Length: 189
Ligand code: CU
Image (cartoon, rainbow, N blue to C red; front, side, top):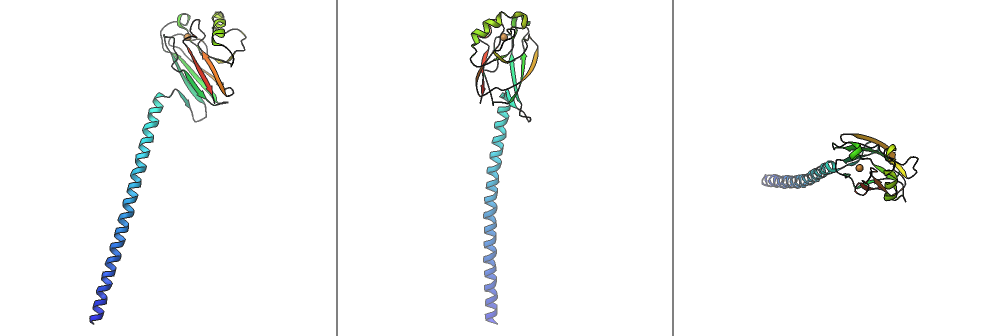
């Protein structure tokens, strides 16, 4: 009887050890998991914050259809908001030009003209200045990839064109005297 009692106690002791071990393992595993979860949550939060900041500043956005939406803004000052537009060869570009100023297009007209490679902005600019009848685009020119119409204050226009082969292209406003200030680079990768 004594032996049986002892062995029963031993069994209980063993069970206690096993239970303690299980509890310990469970605690360790759950601790590890919750730490991992915390790390993942932290990473997710950081990513969301960063993309929000980018979205506010971004004026060149590729939409779900793969079209590059470019927001070009001008005012009564001779200035483009964008000095550089980076796209990929063959991408469809949808550019919206807005003139937020008040001045008439005869006084402070703005457009965007994308020039082919090898065309000097100064040479094109002076030819364009003589083409008043055609919105300051030389009639029958072969120097241009795409251009918007000339806008006055409060107006907006949108054009679509396909990004040319990889390379760097100049864009200007062809209103007389503007190309020196109103210029930028279309970078096609
Ligand atoms: Cu202009």
